[in-house]
Length: 359
Image: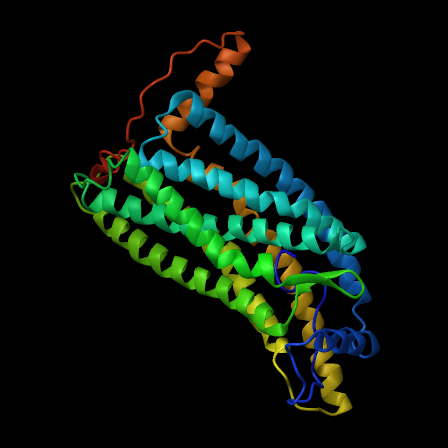
């Protein structure tokens, strides 16, 4: 499951507070109740069609963009430098994230038919890609901030063993955070690949919310400081283009992830036990739940696009990678594959004058 809400919309609006929400019977109750009271047929049909079409496009674009990034890095760059290590790991994490999307597209159409082991593995790999991507974007933002505010810092030019250690730490932390998905997911009745209890469902949702909040704080602080630095009279070269890029990064991030995180948080409220209500309230709650389901499918479109947008906004907007791409395309056009490799050079060396913002 891409999130804890992927295939079913839990509408537990008449759950008694004494119901055990850590047992399989909780889910059976929710599914039965939803079928009887809240008719989600139209929502499920919309989700099945919408998800399969959208994920197919995202998978193609993500594979193309991220594999191209890896090829360019391997062909032209020094992979021992810290920034190139970040970019390489970001491309790999996006590919892990992408690997789960075809399964979710199939899941929305036909339910989960691959068994418990595949349910655990696909969920785990997906979340490892999800969390490692978020952590790497935070680290890349901090790296940019340091490069602008203190371009002579040793962190800016870090390479070798330190780059390897940082990469290992990122993946170890990501695997630890995603470990509940490897352990506490299973296939329940009606081919639902979900967490075994509402506790772990809530855990997964709130982990995503925390990652978004941390990312937002880092983005706002670092990029606001960068903007203030670039607005100084001494930073004139290419200032307009750089500020536009920063603004675009911020808008894309918040437009993509803010609606999604708000929706999954609101959906998480249905996982908590709730007191009995009358029939009028039941109808109202069903309508609210249905709207949240539609909002979830639409907001997820923007959020999950990050795996195919990352190469565009974090790599190919840079002059260095643009030149590498042109050379590679030119070499293909002339059937010349023997282009000498160039040693890596840091493209943010003069960030204080706004010469080059992208990495």
